[in-house]
Each structure stands twice: as C-alpha cells, then as structure tokens.
Length: 600
Image 1 (cartoon, rainbow, N blue to C red):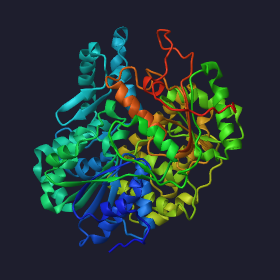
Image 2: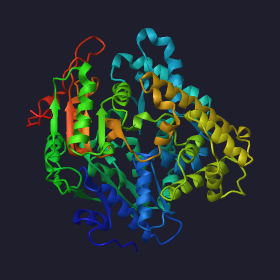
Image 3: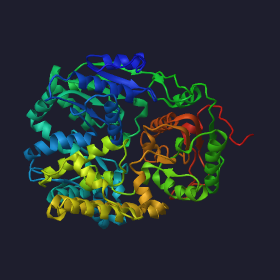
Image 4: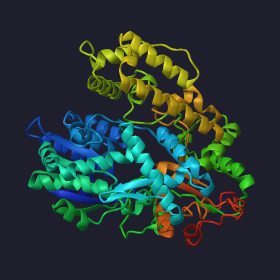
C-alpha cells in the first residue's frame, strides 16, 4: 500500500485522496489539484489486486499527462498499470483501434489527419465560395452525442458550411481518414451500438480520473459516463476541475453539474473541494476573485501570501508605444523587483498579436530568451510516428530525461509492431542507444530532423518507404511542419526554423514565456503581463456568452500570477471596419485600486 509522509497533503487533499467512493472535486487555482491527482493515482495503483486491471487518468493536454506520470514514478510507484493521456488518445487506444472493425468507415483501416491536412482540404472545399466570404474558419465544428455543431456564429453562412462539411466528411471517408474531432464521434458511435465494448472496458478499469473537467465536451462526458455506468459498483471516478476556469465554451467545453454527471454515469459522487491557494499573494487572489462566475471559496496559503504585489492597469498606452511599454514592464520586474526571466509571461488573446510582438521583443532585448507554446515550429500530431520520434531526436541524453526518453522509445517500438515492422532484435534501450549515437551538424530544424530520421532507420536497417503508414506519416509531418514554419515566419517569427527553436519545444522553459490566454492555462509565473485586453478580443466579438466568458478569461489570466500582474488595454488598435477597439468591459468596470508602475 502506498503511504505518504505527514505534511505531504493538507487536510482537504488527504480527505479527497482517502475517500473510498467516487469524488467530484472542485479545486481553486493553485490548490494542489495535480498533487491530489498524483497521490490518488499512486494510491489506486498500489491497491490493484491483479495485473489485468488498469487505472485510467484523462488529462486535457499531453504535457499534463507526462507531468503526472513522472510525479507518480517519483513517488516510487510502478506505473505499468496506469494509462494516462487525453480523451482523444484514450478513444484511439481503447476504442477505435481494437474495435474499429465493427464500424464500416473504420474496418479497413484509417489514418488521423493533422491540422495542416485538415486546413488544406477545407481551403480546397471553400474556394468556390470566396464570393460569399466563406473561409476555413467558418468550418470549425465539434461533435455532441447527437451529431455535430457548427462553431460559426454567423447563421447566414450555416447552409453553405453544412454543404461543405458534407463534402469534407465524404472526402475523408473515401480516403479512409478521420480528423481529431471524428475520433470522439466514432468512439461514441462504437460504444453506443456495441454495448459489449463498455462492459469489457469496465472490467479492465478500476478507476477513471478526469482532470480539468470544466473543459470537457458533452460527447466526452458521455463516453466516460457510459463506461462508468457499465461498471456499476466495480468502477469509481475521480473528477477534478474548476468551473470558474471554463474558457473553452465556444469549442463545446463546459463544467457539468455534479448531479447531472451522477445521473449520466449512474453512480454517486461525493462533492468535495480544495480551497487553499498555494500559488498567489493575498492581493492577487483578492483581485482575480472579482471575476468569479461560480461562488467558490479561496484562501491564501502561499509562501508569497504577504508579498506587496504590483497590480497595474494601463488604458492610455497607444498601440505604437506598446512595445516600449512591454519592455519597460519586463525590465521593471527583472531589474527592480528581482523576478527571474523564466518567471515572466507575456500574454495576449490571439497568437496573431503575439507573433509580430515577439520578433520586436527579441530585437529590443537580445540578452533574454523567449519561449512559448504558440511558437512550436513543427506539426504537433500525437498519432504521427515521426512526431513521436522527433521527441527523442530533439532531446539530449541525460539522467533527468532517461525515464521519459525510454518510455518514448517503447511507444515507438509498439507503433512499429502495429505497422508490421520486425523489431524482434530491438528493445527500448537499444533503440535509445542507436538514437544517442547519431551526430548531425545542422542549423535548420527540418533538415536536421530529415537527416536524423534517415540515419536512425539506416542504422536499424529498415526501409520505412516500404511501409505505407510510415511513408504517409513522413510526408504529412514534413508538409505540415513546413507550412507551420512559413506561417510563423510570415507573422514575424523569422527565427522559428532554427534548430535552437526546435529543441526548445521539449525543454523546460528558460526564457520569458509568450502565450495566449488559452495557452497559459495550467501554468504559473511570478509575473504576468497581458495586452490587447479589448472588447472584441476578450471576449471574442462573436461570442454569444461574451461577458461571462470575459470574466472567466480574466479569472484565468489573473490566477496565473504569483506576485505581480500588469494589464494593458492599448489605444489605437482598429478592427476590419476601422472602428477602434475599446477596453474589455468587465476589466474596465472592475473596482480596484491599481498600482502605478512609473514611480509616480
């Protein structure tokens, strides 16, 4: 049995972890929900009485999955019976791949297309309707258990978009392809019409844990609930999240009510909470709490509780002077307040605002590095074999990375086996040794990866061109990556194709982080600096529930900061019809005594 030391968990965390039944846990920002999840997983793994059952943990991102797995391993607990990843990865691994033969569209095999391939197909299908101003952005959709819903808020375009989607789905079906959203559609369809699937899965899993439940879609709830319902008393659930941080509503995410999930899953969940914030100063908590939508309790237990936080709001900066204002605030925090560069994050609502600004910041402050999730220079498709291999190619052998890289190598061998490649002479360790032996002198990131991929397969004496899946994945990876680099360079990030930028993707951040509000969710920094906080951007001008979602975004933004928070609604930024954007209403109307940062 896994046992922790006194003081590892507070009373709220310990109560949630020790609860024998199913739990519905509402956790405020910085409350240690990841720690509670980690210890719960460790405890459940140590309780497994057979090697035939698994603990399943569903996270919002792959990065979160890696972090939690490594934390569990650091506790000395065997993770061989832990499956952890996103809901899309779960549906692929446990539903589509083993049971796709029961669906006519999947039974002859399928490939998941990446974002670039998706966009190229939509551009082709939208081309005849340019006069009607139909673009690929109008074609976004998400699935519910009843069918798909359009993300386009202009109802005048709906008829044409639905016609385009009919062609889109037909083309994918002809090519035996599915996109990211269709993973959920087919998974739900399979379990709906094949009840034995959920019964089998419920026998395999002892517990399902769901992180960030407030960003979960209805169809995702339906899939998880169906498995829990089939498990009856055999399975338990541990559902964690914060309804105040539900900022993915336009993509179908929403915080389900406790009672609704109970009814859907056919189980009882004990509602519990984590109310102690270990991240932010009392002043920061007081500020972001003003944007709460859900009435939750938050109490500061941070080591920085009494820190004299600077919280500023600037509405008079002109767009032309924005760069100098950002430089001033960065230097103020580093030089006067002693904040490390890696503990500073610059945030804007949209990546298009950040790309050009990043280029100018790099030029103005060459002494600092800049990192960011929006600056990933190659295609991020977790199902693409070459993306998985790039993780090993772009990271160096070191004691701290050994376990992670060994796990990646094992995943690659599993993929090769599924494709039909003979790997009987290989182990994860031997594959890793072959990768570590490759030395390439190349400054261009894509050329480096091409050379690495060729060298490793030459060393393994495997011609990957003989395997259609590997060949298709290879072409898709490089086409998508080149398109992404071209786009980022066009937006102003000329440095993005360099091998240095490639290597940063899988390294801990060392410089100032650049991120969108959605991208910064789940992270924390000593100082957060945000600009373009303007009505029409926060909230988005097409958001029908804009004011409530603006509050949630400001709540997320403010709660990322430990010590200092600087907010800017600049002047002189115009929309497509030359109207000037005004400050975000929820921000402008907030009653708070802000600090001056100019020494006045």
